[in-house]
Length: 603
Picture 1 (cartoon, rainbow, N blue to C red):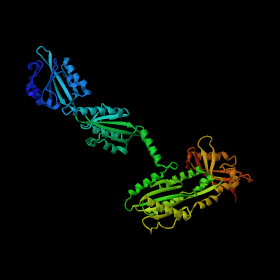
Picture 2: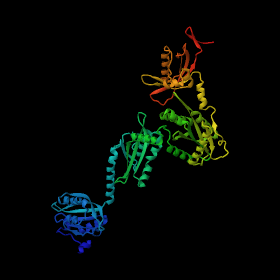
Picture 3: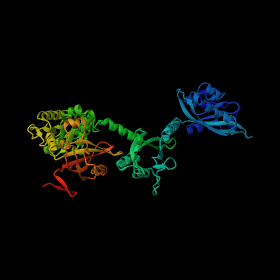
């Protein structure tokens, strides 16, 4: 038909005149062309629609169509999910509603459905009765897509905001903070109080701890976030700590979400603050466990090797580095003689001693068994390595005694390098140095230089002048000797002996055979009149840490007269939370007699 293909020749149908429709066909055609929108004239009584402009070409529809909207819906011109909205537009017009609008997806000639926005207004005859509706259609897919994304974004925020302790909304394009939504910690300061930039600086100054202040400012920087959004990255996260009013460090996670406003195209920002304090501290605890040897709490082998490799990679040219391998001598004897529990105690004490020996200078780890590793950097010269090796050998000297005794020392192998050496090679050289120290007689150290074959470090193993055998001999020949007492913190305040030196052991009249059935006690054979005073002194020192001294008498079975003893008491550190340890240095004053109640030396 001619009128279906040539809009200029088409005429209104249904018995409606141009005057009755309000505007002539030529006027409507001109308006449609100038505005670029699709225009439809709809006869309310006949339900005939007349289209203008380029509707036939753009949508593949006739200029004039009957039984609208049902005919349109029947041939799937409108997508199924928006049929109700499209139908309501005509239903409202027929019912006499003066104007209305709707959004629907309409099929193009290509077969693609695109969003369109439609508005209508009624036209009335001379008696004021509505006769026609003029409808305008324009594609709004881009706007609808923005609205859809925005609605989806807001919907997705719901769960995030519910899990948050606080949230903030802002327009970072306009540098504005919405003080009505979420924000409660912000305090207005000055003329620029409501700006986003002022909000960020306030948070950095008042909330973030010193450690995170610079990172906080960088993360929330408005220009950074705008650039991030322009790069199609719409989310970011920062974990940081704040200081509570009680002075406690607490951890938060700031979840940032951005989207464009569907109308203004501004970039909107939502910051949701989540309390992650418990999770963070639990993570730190688990990370600590993963890196630590469970027995000694120093680094395990894997963590220690990783730390050393990173330090070797960062070494400056010429920087002197040293790897120590420490092996306990005779450790198997401890396990075999006193049991693995005592062996574990020795390993823990070794780890503590190494940590103190290297202070904050070193990386300390346990290889396994009774082998340990220490790594230090920035040594001034080889003498620093010798000093540390000498300190280790001097420190790691243990003597365990009850009815039997065992002595432990340490052998140390040290490898030096001035950088450029891989961990495996350094470890191999230190292990070989340890072997040489062991072969030379234990309780000594050997140092090799990986870089210089003629270095002074590559000499014979060095042995301490005072080894464990000499120390045991010294303890054996002391006058009366020493004893290590353990005092329970809770009632009853029992006092027992953990260790007694050979000289004290003998001064109390014990033999090896007797000790097997009767352990030595610090208070054994103390004359009763002196016993309460001695007990009070021991407990006082255990509780306060203040050194005390006491003069008392003992009465051994074979003694005709009581003998005098002088004791000096000091508290020492221990790893038992239920008790304190007191070391007693006891002197035999048997050559003192009491004259008129006053102790005097026998001449």
